[in-house]
Length: 117
Image 1 (cartoon, one colour):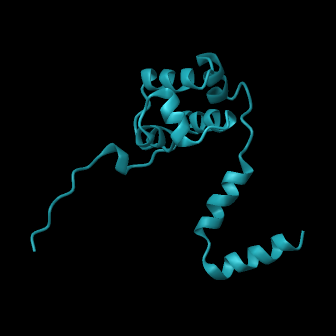
Image 2: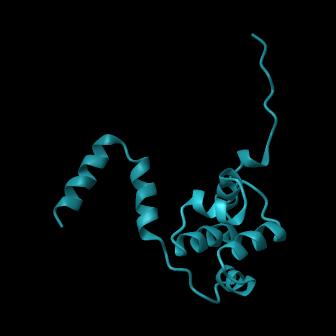
């Protein structure tokens, strides 16, 4: 069987930047799902997901379109990126990501610990 070379795409590579993390934080701060946010902004869910997860290049026009859709200013965005304004950690989301990576044995152990609280 002949092997077909897969075309390299930017979306195949995940490069998490501070800008991407800030975009995700801004969406979550407005309590918008990815689907709802994409609809409000006028982007596809895939494009917004790629922007938030470092799978596309964040050009200024895309950033402005996203933050404008969330009713934030460019200044708000820059202050978060530069660290002038602290971005709260998203402990819940970080924990969920860790839980997704655990095998079943470790997950049962974590469950037992959590139920003890």
